[in-house]
Amino acid sequence: MSRVVIVGASLAGLRAAESLRTHGFDGEIAVVGKETRHLYDRPPLSKKFLAGEWDADRIRLRKPEEIVALRVDWHHGTTATHLDIENKVLLTDTGDFTYDACIIATGGAVRRLPNQPNHTGIHVLRTINDAEALRDDLAPDKHLVVIGAGFIGLEAAATARAKGCTVTVLEGLPAPLIRGLGESMGRTVARVHHDNGVEIRCNVRVEEILGGPAVSGVRIVNEHGAPEVVDADVVLVGIGVAPATDWLGDSGLTINDGIVCDENLQCAPGVFAAGDVARWPNALFADIEPTMRVEHWTTASEQGAHAATNVIAHLNGEPLTPYSAVPFFWSDQFTSRIQFLGRGTNADDVRVVAGNPDEGKFAAAYFGNDRLIAVLGVSLPKAVMPARKLLQDRATKSQALAHFAEAAT
Image (cartoon, rainbow, N blue to C red; front, side):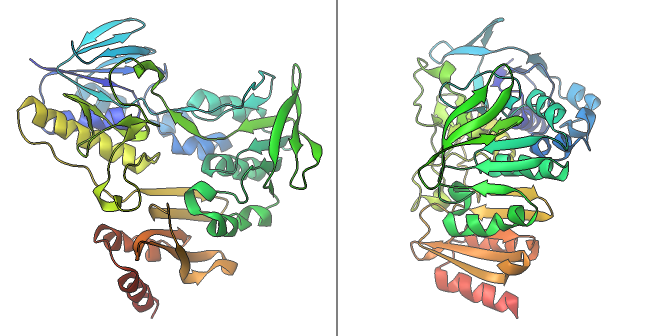
C-alpha cells in the first residue's frame, strides 16, 4: 500500500487529498498542518468574517461528513521541520512520516516590518485567529491605520470603514495595488476608497510603530519627505506574504521565492508543490515571465488537484502532465467586484476596452509582446470572463482589440 503525505492543511492540501480519492488512489493519505483550526476558507477573513457577518462555521471548506469520507489522517497543530527526499521521510515536531510521494502545500507566512513591536492593537491578517483578533479591535470610534495598499490591506480597510472606523492606508509605492494592477489602474481602482472616506497616502515610508503597551501611532516620512506621526488606535500590517519554505533550507530542493518546480509541479522525484509556495514555468506566459508564483485561491485549488493527479501518474510509472493555466483572482471592496485574469507583469500598453472608470464599471486590457496578457474588470464580469479564452489562445493585440470592439457593439 502506498502512502502520500501532504504538507499543508488548507485549500491546496484539501484539493490534493480530494483529487487523490477521486482518481482512485486507495492508499494512505496523511495531511500535516501547522494550524490547529480545521480547514477554512481564507478570502472571507478580510471581508464577511472580519465584518462579523459570517461565523467560523460559514467559512468551513467542507462539511464534517465530507472530511470523514476522504479517509485521511489529519495532523493539525503539527509543524513540518525537514524533508529528507533521499529517504522519503517528512520530519515534524510530533514525529516522522515516511512516504511514497509528497505534496508540499504550505502556503505563505505574513511578512512583518523590521523590528515590528508587539504592542496591543498591532495585527497581521492571514489566519482565522488573526481575523478574530482584528475584528475584536474594530469599533466605530477607532482609527485603523493599514500599512500596505495591497488587496488584503484594502479589503480590510473597506470592511473597517463600513463598520464606522476612521481608516488611513499607508503605501510606500506611488499607487495602491501597483504590484497586481500596475500604477494607472491601481489609482483608478482605488477611487472607490476615496469615495467612501478612506484616506490612502502613497510614497510614504514607515519608520516606526509607536506605543507601549498599546499602539498609539505610526511614525512616517511623508510624501513630501518630512517626518510625521499618524495617530492610530489599531494597526494592520499588510505588506504581503512570503512562501513558507524556511523548513526546507537543507532539503536539497531549489528555493527561489518559492519552491522551484518543473512544468509538472514536480520539485524532486515523487515530490510536488502546489499553491502559494510553488514556483513553476507556466507555458502560457513563458515569454513574459519564465517562472511564476501565484497567490490566488483559484490557483491553489487547481494546483492541489493537478499535483495529486501527477502523484498517481508517478506512482503508476506513467507520464506526468504539465500545469498551465490563466491565473485568476477577485476582490470585493465596498460595492466593487474586482476581477483579474492573466499576468500584468511587463505590460507595455494598458487600455480601457469597456465601460467607464468614472462610473465605477469598466474593463481594461493589458498588452505585452504584442499580445493580450491580462484583463482587469471592475464590476463588469461580462467583459472579463469571456477573455479567458483569448488569454488561453495567446491572442494578439489586434485580435483582442477586435474582440472587445465587437463585444461593445
